[in-house]
Image (cartoon, rainbow, N blue to C red; front, side, top):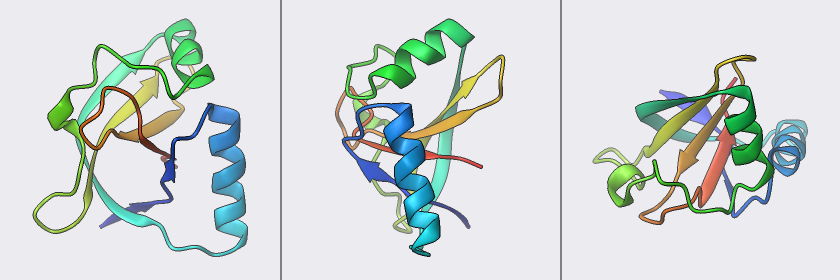
Length: 104
């Protein structure tokens, strides 16, 4: 099972990177997750998305997130087409990335 450390209501990609680094340093175990779909964004679109992770997104649908039947978090994998950077989004029924993680 895939695991990642998800943060709640993270403002931007920089905060998410710092939170992830701290969680790894503190050896915090990540949550199980499954990817339900992928969204590829251009460098500019990804930067706009990553600079404000609390903004509503038109490509997030209410049924995209939440736990599956095994308790794993259902997420969207958002990919920067240029760099390959990935952010996992579990929206928990909202139209913004309520929970985010960095996929490595």
